Length: 158
Image (cartoon, rainbow, N blue to C red; front, side):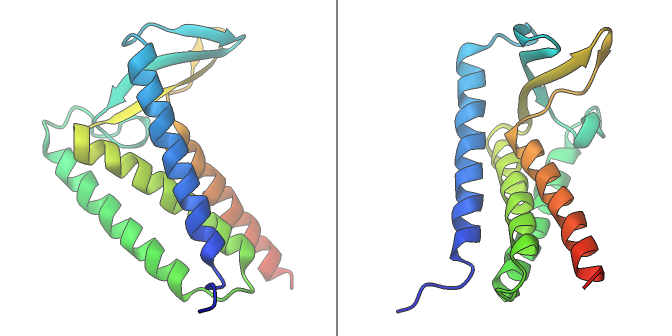
């Protein structure tokens, strides 16, 4: 039995999901809610929970958003799995992009399913300006989006 041409995408997604869930568990175990722990200048670890989406969109919507985001995240994840499954091996950057986006979506989906909210703990700031707190899954989605843009630019020029 031969190894599928895209096997590494599943390993990449699985590794990022595992890293995301381990770091969230560590954050919940070691950090105190809303008490920043300075790590470097302009970088804290701060445990927060987000019931909304990016930048706390719909966070105060009354509870229905949990089911909305669970459904949306599930549909997006299924779509990404199908896209990755059908993807040809000559598109490694696109494969990596989709694997990172899938990992981030599933990482946050796990939190929503178990807790009804997403665990965030990475805080970046400059002076009095604070970027919204985020997690490894969010980083993974952003890396995937960047690779998606890079792939589209590279393929347009060929």
